[in-house]
Structures are given as structure tokens and as C-alpha cells.
Length: 625
Image 1 (tube, helix red, strand yellow):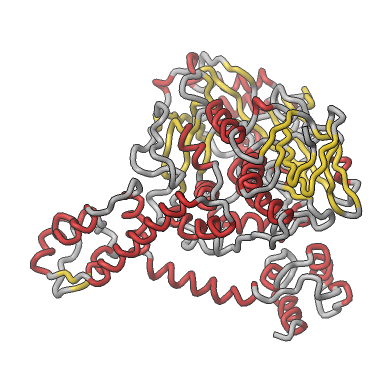
Image 2 (tube, rainbow, N blue to C red; image 1 turned 60 degrees about the horizontal axis):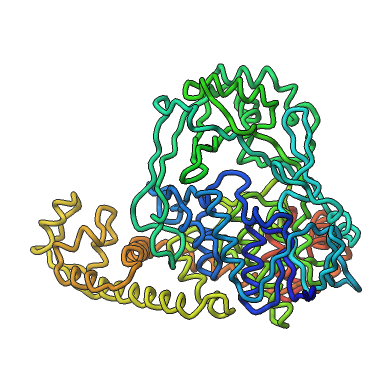
């Protein structure tokens, strides 16, 4: 067996799978090294993909040619489009998946990917020479040589789990931690930190009183994650349920806070603010009498359930006593308690936008090792790292995405520009161009880019081109077709919208809140004929995309103009142009931050915390602008 590769990927989580797949399919000889081939793409926490802003990332991964959306659709046991009561910029797809089938599907894909080998082992040392990575050394005393290495080790680097005062070394429950790799990386001058995350108790469904819970059904319409998936109904669709904690629950938890690693000094690292443990909730919101919990299935046939909202590192007996104070769980039986886990991460400001180390050439980082939390954030980074590792091997320029092009672009820019002081989670509020980054048009934004770099194949690009052409024809028809009041007013009355007093173009009617393309068809035979002729498995998606463009055209045009105006600062490149420490006109904080990050552009410099508008004006003057 030849142990020389173009790309080595260390870790087979969500980042590692996308990275290895992308690099191999682009043509690089790739090896994915994992500690356990039976845990590829393991869903360590909730077996769910998507959610607010996260769903947009998954659609972007799919549009670029990644696999997360395809695997999710194939293994989904419930699908919902969140935030449908709000505007389309906020719509976010989410799916509950079968944990085991998700992992199996990913392994099947990887094992049938050309140019990709998988090796089961633990990496103990990163090898470098003259500031360039050259390979790794493993626990089995094997040296793998490589032109590039991507670290996607998740929570395994010096991982330590906490259940009350019990501390168990490991990267995940019942799985060993990875030792020594962090130390070999820090020897190269790369700074490391510690973070914490956690997971809830797992419950046996046979012990639950579902009559005391509120059912939460999924949706049964055309929405799904991937533009290539035929149907999301391959598996049996299941319910989720909700219930509430109460003051009795809170008392049990509060009485044992001195045994919580979060409050007795056992854990010093910072956990995710937006996904707090149940003990953190009762401390942060002492006057709140209840907190909502979501009980979600782990698979199509298993009796194992995930209790979303009850993450905890308290002793097992405390978790169990508290749960039994909830009516639905009065006879509860559990499979394992919740736990917290501490792990090493590397400060992402040490990376370029290509996710390559600024200190070691050919070394890339993606996923939780960059200080993020979430499968989707990890997968998005993995895809970009895999693309760029290949492009470095091929002598090509880096592939990056702007903040106005993708949530993935926002994610990476935030990481490398602002850094992290807690596990980073994506929200729609982090994106200043939300209307441009809708989930419905991820393919329009990114599939041409994926095709240009070679990750989107001819079949997918042909489907995209047909969809784009159909939408354009629909838009042209509604903008040119005239409506007369006498014929349409009876239908408008049924829709409780103002009748016409004079003729108008069809686009004006569809722009109204009460009107949709579908509820106009009976009143406009010529329009119905156009819609009926759409021959595509994505017909409903095409209609929805066209309708969004019609109803929100003004907002989209306005936001695009703002983005284009700010693009001027993105075009002013300043990397390596200045000795920031010597520029006395800059504030002391700005000099330190700019020297540490060495931003690519004026725009990136403006997003660095501590760099003021006055500092930016100084840089503009020095740049001759």
C-alpha cells in the first residue's frame, strides 16, 4: 500500500467527510484517517440537520456539490420548514434523521468515491519541514506523506467528559480521546484553547407517557434539502413531542448545583451561550417557572429518544430525579445520562479565508477544531477546506466565498476575522445580506461556482440550468402579461384583496400578500397553461422561487445595491502592505489586532473587533483612496 497522498484528512466527522469527498472528486489522491470506521459521520448530539441559518448552510453545501443534503434527504424521519410565518429570508429547513442510517449512507458514499482511501488509526503527530506540512505519524507507527493535511478532529483532541464529579477521558461517549496531536501542532507556533459542549440524556420511549406531551408533526410537501433528491419519504416519517419543565424540576437541579462541573470549578472552558445546559438555564433565568423540552426520535425503529433542551453535566442521579418530576417522565428509563465534554481547538484567526494555516503551508483546519459548534457549520468548513487543499496541490488559486454570496462565507469570515471566545453557532442575524442568502436560491448563487471548480457534475448542472431557464420564462411572462379588471376581479374578491380599477401587469397582482401564483391560475387560463407545461421534478420549487423573486424584488434589489457599494472596500487589498505596529495614527488596539490578523482587504479590516472607523480612514489614506 502506497502511503503518499495529495490530501490527508484527519477525522471522519461531518467536516472530514465533506473535505475528503470534495478533494477526491476534484482529482486529488486522498486518504481519510479515522479512529473508527463504524462511526463515520456520527451524529454525536441530536440526530438532526438544519434549523435556523443552519438549513441555509446545508442547501449551500448541496448547491456547491457536497453531500450533506443528499444524505439527509435519504435518511430523514421528519422534515419541517421553520419560520414559515416570517419572510423567505428567514425560512430554514430542518430534518430529524435516523442516526445509524445517516452514518451508514455517508460510509457508502465514501467507500465508492474514486481517489479516496480510508484508514482506521489515530494520528499522533503532524510532520512538517521548512514551514510546510509533509504528512503525519500514527499510533500504529505508520508515516503518511502528503502535500496537504486537513485537521477535522472534532471534540477528540484531549477530550474529557464530565458527569458530575466523574471525569472520563474521551472524544465521545464510549470512544477514546486523541492524544499528542495537539502538542505536535502547537510546537509549530499555532495557538490552542479549550472549549466545552454537552449533550442530553437519552430516553427509552417505552417508559414515556406520551399522553402528557404535545405531538409535533412534520410537513409533507415538496421541500427537502438537496436539489437532486427524488423524495424525502424513503423512511417512515415520525412525530416529535414537546413538554415543559416545572418548579419541582428546577428545585432538584438547583439543590445539586454544587455537584455540577460548570459551577464547582471542575470545568473552566466556555460553553455555547445559545445552547445552554439545563442547569445554566435555571441559574440564568431564576424567575422563569418552566423551560420547553423537545423529545425527538433517534431513528426509524429504535426506542432511543433525544431530549432536546435538557443538556446537562450534573450527576446521573440528579438528572434522573429531575426528569421524574415531569409528568411524561414519571416512570422514565434512560439509556445514558447527559454529559459535558471539554476539548482542544485552534484559534481560527490563525487561518486564511481558504482555511489554511498562516504559519504552516499546506495545513488546513475545519469544524469544531476551529471553535464552531454544529454539524452544518463543520460540513461547510470541511467542503471549503477540501476544495482548497486540492487547489493548492493543483497549483490553483484559493476558492473563497464572500459575505454576500453565502452563509458559509459569513461563517468563515467571522471565524478568521473576529475569532471566537465561545463555540460559534450560525444565526441569520450574523448575515447582513439575509435577503440575498435565502435557502430557496442557494443553487442560483452557488451551483455555477461549484460547476466552474469541477465539483458539480454535468447532470446536476443541466438540472440547474433548466430550472434557471424556467424561472426566467415565468418572470418574463408575468411582467409582460396584461390583466383586465372585469375578468380577474371576481377571483380577487374570493381572496379578500382589493379589486382592480384598471388593467395592470400580472406581476403587480402576484406582488400582493394575499395572492399566490397557484391561487390565480383558475382566473387566468393562459397563466395556468404556462404552469401546466413546466416539466420538472422540482416544479413546486420552481414556482416558489419565482414567487419569492416577484414579491421581494424591491428588497432584493436594494440589498444587492448595498452589497455592491460595500464591495469597493473588498477590492482594496492590503495584506502584507503595512507594518501596522509602526503606524502611530492607528489606535493601540487596532495596531495589535491588524498585526495579528493581517487582513486581506480594507473590508475585512473593518470587521475586526477593536478597529474603529477612524482606523479604517487611516488605512484608506495610506492606500491612496
